[in-house]
Length: 261
Image 1: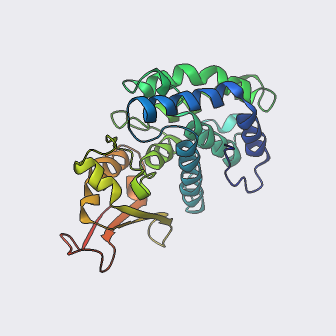
Image 2: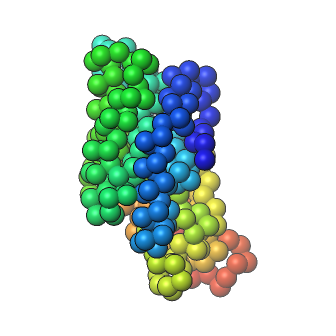
Image 3: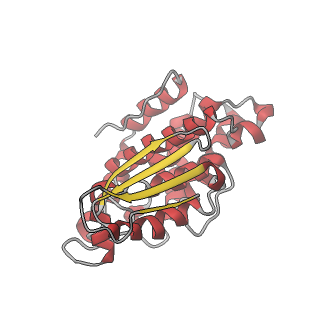
C-alpha cells in the first residue's frame, strides 16, 4: 500500500514520501514486520497500515504545536544549519514510518533493532535532498525520534515526543498498541475493543486536545496504561489535554468522564 500524508506545500516531504513508496527494502521490511506481529505473534499489526496512521497523527499534532508557537528541536538547536519547520516535518514523517521497521527480528528490543535497520534507508532516501552535514544531522534526529517511542526512553525533542505519543494513539476500533492475543478475552482485548474513536483538535489553552470515545469504560485501561505513559516523558506534557469518555447510552457507566493534563 502507498504511504500518504498531506504535504501541505512541503516539497521536501513530497519527495521523501515518493522515495519511501519506491524503496523496496523499506516496504519489504514493513511487510516482514507485520507478518511477525500478526501471523506469528498473533498481536496487533506493525506494518504499513500502522505506520501510515502514526505518520498522519504525528503530523497533525506537530502542526498544531507549531501553530501554538512551539519551535521544533532541529530548528532551535541547529539554526546555524538553516533547518526549517519543513525539515522538522520530514524528521517526524521518517521517524513515524520507520519506528517499527526492525520488528521483523522480534518484539523484544524492536525499538533499538529498528535503528540499525533504518540507518541506511534514511541515508538513501535523503541523498540529494540534503547534502553532507545536513543529511547526517537529519539522520541523527530521525533515529533519536525513533528510539524514544519506547516508553522507557525519555524524549528529548519535540519531534521525538510527537512520534512517541502518536504511536500510542493508533488505538481506535481494536487497534490499541498494547498487544493482545486474538480470541483471548482479557483486560487487554476488552479494553482495546472499547475504543471507538480518537479525535485530535486544538483549543485556546492546549494545542493538542485528545478526545477518546469508548463504548465501554474498560477502554480506560488502554488510555491509562499506554497513552498516559507515552505522554509522560514526551516533553510535551503541558501542551496536551486528554479526555476519555463513554459514548452516551452505550453502557451502564462505571466512569462518566476521565481526564488528565
